[in-house]
Length: 208
Image 1 (cartoon, rainbow, N blue to C red):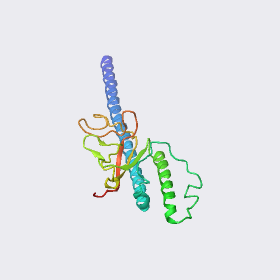
Image 2 (image 1 turned 45 degrees about the vertical axis):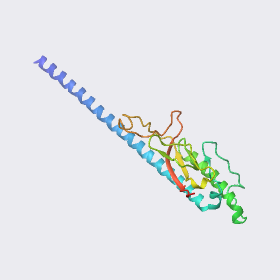
Image 3 (image 1 turned 90 degrees about the horizontal axis):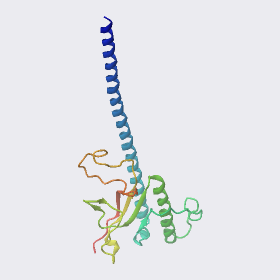
Image 4 (image 1 turned 60 degrees about the vertical axis):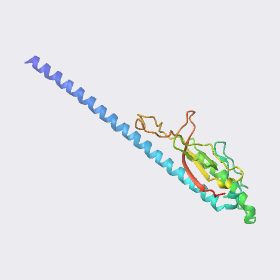
């Protein structure tokens, strides 16, 4: 009778250990799901912020059409340090009281400086480029920072675009973050810098 009780106690302990292991795997699975859900939510919030930044700058450029056509917004790269606005150049503090034609370049300079600072502070590793680009997207490499302007003699023939990228928490590794065999441009280059993830066309360009 005593040996039977010992065997029963042994089986009960083994069953408890198996139950704990099964429960642990379940908890780990739920924890992994929650982490990925948080990352997707975070990435979605960055998508919204980037789109708002791009559309805001596009609206400012269209509102200041003369300066936009005069190439005041061409070839801007926020990869360099942001500009510290003085009180006299900050239109939030000091309004431009000159004629509209004279205030236009002041407004353009303010919009650029403020927008550069917002991109750098709103997105992790955030970078944005405004340029004339005829080949914004490639089927093999996706979006890229360099800009191609085939008609240098007449830049207005080339679309004016805003490119924005940031470093998300996704590593985009095949088999881990995305399905094996899935092609998905990584949000960070080999050196850890951001790659373009969003492009907004400001001006489509015109036919020569």
